[in-house]
Structure formats: C-alpha cells, structure tokens
Length: 414
Ligand code: 5CA
Ligand code: ZN
Image (tube, rainbow, N blue to C red; front, side, top):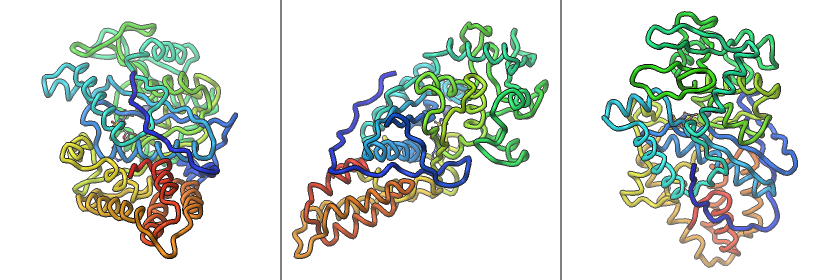
C-alpha cells in the first residue's frame, strides 16, 4: 500500500546511543541486539475504522520515537506495518452504517495516512494490507495443517470447516511456549482471549485458547478462494505472515499497544515460530493505553478524540505531538482537554526560548547530550521535555542546534 511522505530529519552532530527498551516478555529494559547495523521493526497497524484516535496516535508515536532513536545512533532501520482491512468489527461497522466495507477501509486508510503525515510520523517501508496477501496467508495455514498444528472445527453456518491452531501440539513440536510473550496465568489468558477477538467458548476446539487460523466463508461475508478453501484468515496468522515476509525471521522489535500483548502477540509469535523454526522477534515492546472519560479510548466504547478533528479545529500538529510526548510511552494515562492547552503553552515557551538572548546561555551541545541520554533510556520523553523547558527558559548558545534536535529526536517542528 502507498504510505505517506516522510518528515524532514535534520542531521545532528555526533551520534546518539542505541536505546535500551522495555521488553514486555522479560519485564525489564534490554538492549535489543543490532545485527549488521540494522534494526527491524514491525508495528501492528490499524483496523481501518474510527481512525486515527489519540490512542492510535500515542502508540504510533512511541514507535516513531524508537526509529528516531535508532537512526540518531547511526543504526539503519527497516519498518513494517500492516493494515487489518478485513475483520469482524470492520464488517460490522460497514453493515451498521450501510457503507461497503472496502470503501470504509479505503477512506479510513487515507485519513490515517493524512493524520500520520501531519503528525510527522516516519512512514514504514513496508505497508501491507491483509487483503494484498491472502494467498500467502492461506499457504501458511496450509503449512501449519501439513505439520499437524492446524485442525478443523465443524461449522453450522458454512460449507467448509474453520481451522484452528493447536496450542498443545505447537508446544511439543516447536520452541514456542504459551506465555513466552505474555507471562500471564491461565484465567487471565482466558479472560483476555474472550475480550480481544478470541472465542474460548467455541465448541469443538481442543483448547479454549486455540486461535482461529482460517474462517470458512459465511453467507454475506467477503471471502477468498485459497489453498485451504473459501474463506478469510484469522487475525494472528495475518501479522505473522506479513511481518516475516517484510522483515525475515527474528527481527528486532515487535510493537503495538499494550492491548495486543495477549492474545495477539503471543499467538503471532507461536505461528511464526512454527512456520520458521525461529522466534518472531527479539524484543516485544508495548505502548501504554490512553483512556478518556474514565475508560480506555476505544472504538467499541466510542469515547474517541480524533486527530483529524483536532487538526480541523486549528490545533497545530506539533502541539498534539507535544501533548502525547509529555507522558512516557509505556505509562497508562487519561487524556484531558487541558493537556492540549499545556502543550500549546510549552510550544509557545520553546519558540520564545529559542529567540531569547541570555547573559549566561546554556551550552546547546550539553543539551543535546542530555536529550540523547534520556532518549536511550527507554525513550524517556518526559525527561527530555523537562531538559528543554529548563534550557529554553534560560536561553541557549546555539538555538539552531536545539531546534534541529527537537525536530530530529522528538519530531516537533518549531
Ligand atoms: N489491527 C489491529 C492490530 S493487527 C489493531 O489492534 N487495530 S486497532 O485499530 O484497534 O489499533 C491500532 C493500534 O493502536 C494498535 O497497536 C493498538 O494496540 C493501539 N491502540 C488502540 N487503542 C489504544 C489506546 N486507547 N491507547 C493506546 N494505543 C491504542
Ligand atoms: Zn497485528
């Protein structure tokens, strides 16, 4: 799929440090291994409806920062993102609003691109919609069936069977173990599976957690004819196939919002390991969930603040970025409209600060060093903002350098 125009990335003197990042599976920060001077990142993309709310924006900002930190450290990056452009909630929304699902998806993808561009997000090199690679996904499902990791579950309302992944067989035949990505107890896994697209109550499954690999065609639902019959893919196998095709095996970071840790990233890892005999990624990183009006900002609840609405209302994109950057990417926090006012005031103060002539200006090279230290420490943007607040309050000896650093590292164009 077409992406969006990349933002300008000013060159900074010297190099930053490779970032330490919080690895969800081990519960602490690690130094992800960089091979051949290259970091590879896969971030789970949108299901294209109700895009782009501030929760989406916060998650994509976290990984945009990760890419900026790597690049500043002289590390080349390859970035892949998917689009889940065929999925139950998307079809439901299309049905409820009387819009063709394809049209809904295309309009929302276009809106997302425009929002990402305006928010100065680095675009992925591989931007892949599920509907662009149904054959590859079906081939992967077929392979899982051939090696005994997929089984049929009869359907009452379709001609063919649905196919499920055999979690127990996978644990005895592959290196993957349930809990490798999300070390949770069984009761929590069952609960999260039911909440997040799984079907632990479905009759005929060998284990309640076994995830869907292929859904046989149903009346009135879009479907594709494939190596495993007429139907459409399950969610986790889509990301496993797209990620491995774009980035190869054992890439550097698998990312997304914290709601994807289980079951999505657990089973994406399971499928990928079964298909390739190697782990999906070295490091699993998750952005904290943003809430609004007391609940997680979510399409299902409808408590959304849309980036496009803020932009239409005349809010500057750098102010939206700054409002999000005020929180560490892993923290869970609630959005208040006041956050935007604070960000606008900070933007104004920084602009004034860059013009300030001072008797005792702060050394800009020292500021850059401090920014890089905080950036390498799990992308600690609140510390970076505090560093800039203090320096620009006093005035700096090289405003151009600080302006470029703010732009290159934080993506805030002043
Ligand atoms: N298409 C799948 C991933 S394969 C999906 O989760 N799509 S989504 O549109 O629901 O979400 C897109 C991204 O935004 C995901 O990484 C998700 O974890 C993240 N996200 C969704 N809601 C929030 C929120 N309230 N706060 C932070 N991130 C969120
Ligand atoms: Zn995904």
